[in-house]
Image (cartoon, rainbow, N blue to C red; front, side, top):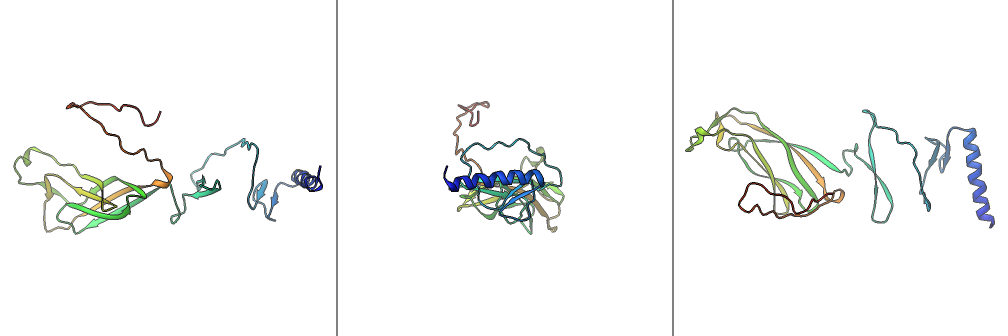
Length: 209
């Protein structure tokens, strides 16, 4: 056995013995935070077994470990409002539209890098059915959707067949969206479905088994 290797094993044995005498051991740090705290890079050539996972509590901040393209491991802190995340929640307050109609709101969010969906929408003014032919036979639910135009995500919001009861009042749309990063989610692409003039159909194969 070469001397440097022997010295390394002696160092590790010393750490184990020190760990039996002291509750916490640090490598690269004089203030260990746990039983073994390594401040720096760690390379493991064998198997690493983790025996116990402690459950998260309501007050805990959760993090993810992400393997980068160079095989390094990075921490993803979802509690950091300015950092990267698996998904983002954004609420838009839209005012001064034409009665209740938002035909095209450009969020400016890249359709190449992100996927955007609306999760909820509400309008804060009383509505009347319009005088269009057949409108008295219909009811109206809020309609919101997202679409891509010019490389960015856009939002449409409306009450079909209805309009603000008092056109002089300025209403407000509150639209909450969920934004997924393409880097941190899997994109299965497009699936074309032929319903053969019917109302029922099925996928040729599930995208997830």
